[in-house]
Amino acid sequence: MRIEGGNKNEVDIKNNRQTRPTNTNNMDEDLFQQKTDLDGLQQAITQLKNEIGKVIVGQEKMIELLLAGILADGHILIEGVPGVAKTLTAKLLSRAISTGFSRIQFTPDLMPSDVIGTSVFDPKETSFRFKPGPIFSNIVLIDEINRAPAKTQSALFEVMEERQVTVDGQTFRLALPFMVVATQNPIEQEGTYHLPEAQLDRFLFKINVDYPTREQEFQIVSNHHQLSTTNMIDLIQPVLTVPQIDALRAQVRTLHVEEKLIHFITAIVSATRNNKAIYLGASPRASIGILNGAKALAAMRGRDFVVPDDIVYVAPAVLRHRLVLTPEKEMEGASPDEVVTGIIQSIEIPR
Image (cartoon, rainbow, N blue to C red; front, side, top):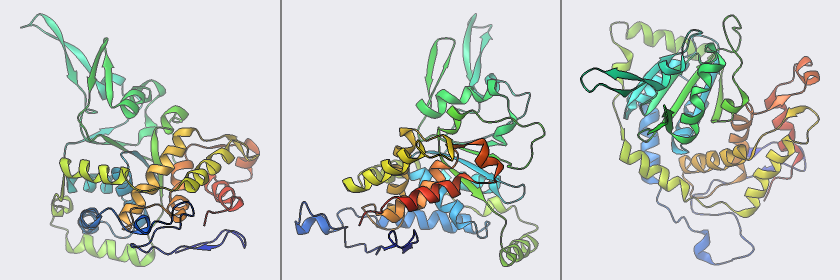
């Protein structure tokens, strides 16, 4: 795999499952051997891709980052124009995992209690009891998240970060795993609200979904024609259970990351705070997000160690929603992805 980053930054990285990057501090041969058996993880990821692929054509990067988000225990924000299977993909993912699922359609009149729940009076007990809202599930799909006002958005702050809800002085913990998959439309402004930066920072990845190619669209239409009498979601069979997800996440957390790669991550994030094109840079939570995302991606690619390629691949998805460009850059039509690419190219990639 090749990273293009200018003449001094070009580097070839071999994804050899039996070889680690050279560590000059310790030449022990055992260090360079694959120590974690990732066959089960790769088999599970392949099964998930195959199930989702029964319905979704293309969109490989979206699916790959979604699965990496599951392994990294992070929330996902998906942005794309209407009709590119954002919501459908999230529903298929929840179907392929044998766990709880709920969907919340965000609207301008939605209240915080409609999301997290509220206390209701029980006449039999002559007392109030908490009635959980739809956020109390394992995979929660929030459709058109930017249609709700800030008051409702703030209800998600605690639950996304701490996996708990506090109502009337009582704290209620959510069952794990817990993951929010939210969608939003980038072009429609009528009846939408800007998401608070504090909330955006709680999403591990922001995935941009493009139109399919002409060939992919032909396949989509052909599949729809052939399966016109079948509910496509019924084609998906569960392939993972909650204990299996917990086991896979535990494996991912143990992956090896060399110190020079952690320096590489922090150099990228630190550069976002000193770039003339950026008004608001990324926080340390972004550094942790890149680390966790790179670990998940490395495991999906069959390695129990992270290489620079993994970091370069996930960095734009981790940073694009956390950066606020200067008004001048926005007027020039620059995108966060372009700025992030420039930052990565300006930093020497570890060898």
